[in-house]
Amino acid sequence: MSNKIAIIGLGNLLLSDEGIGVHIISELQREYDFPEEISIIDGGTLGLDLLPIIEGKEKIIFIDAADLKKEPGWAAIIEDEKLPSFLAPKLSLHHVGLGDILFASTFQGNKPAKVVLLGIQPEKIDVGISLSATLAQKMPEFIELIIKKLREWNIETQKKPKEPPRVLSNSF
Image (tube, rainbow, N blue to C red; front, side, top):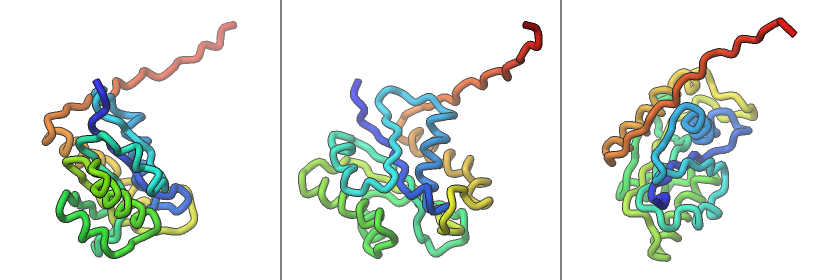
């Protein structure tokens, strides 16, 4: 079975909340098992280099920090026809890349049938590798939005079983 659905996290891990998409991808990979048809991708700041990655996909969920003009931690699902107008104001360099990749995929006739952006209002975009406390605390809510969207597409995911803690023996 080929991977027809992609979940792609965007952002720069060196700019605190700007890296939320990549942090969510890491959490999804660590905590969930996904069906074979789903690709979980760290898109970082690849921009147009994502074009060959999305080619042939039917549905894509992008996850990214976005200026939603709301309080920090606010999240919104932006879909299909609403996406181009949302991306029109250039929010950052990789948003330009996301808009360009969607335009290029449409121009080439490879645009996925369904494109979704989970946009998350950052609290801070400063040099630093840690998320703000606000976004870190809301991480389970962001992940639940993704899981909910997958369920709308009739795709079920499973949480990975928790491994029991290792007990180290002091006998040699």
